[in-house]
Length: 102
Image: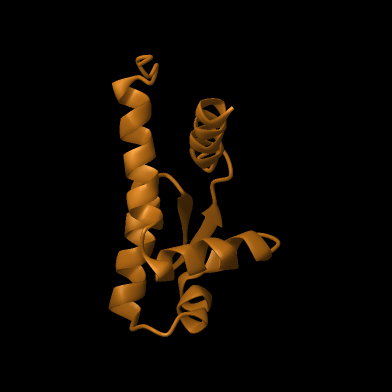
C-alpha cells in the first residue's frame, strides 16, 4: 500500500477546520456569511439561528479560532466576515480524496 503524502501540519489544519464545521449551527453561520454582501453584525447572525446569544457567540468564537471568520470591532458591536482563503483547506481535502479515488 502506498504511503499517504500528507504532512502533520496539513492534517492538523484539516482537523481544525472540520472540527469547527462539525456543528450544524456553525455551518449555518458560514452559509449566512457567504450569502451576505459584506460583514454581518453578531446580532444579525444570532437572529438567523435558533439558539441563545451566548451559544451563538460560542459558535462564532470557534469559527474565529479555526480561521474561518474574521471579526472586527466597531464600537460596541462586532462585525464578522467569512475568510474564504481558509475554506481552501476544505477544497484541498476534497482534492486529496479525488486523487485517491482516481
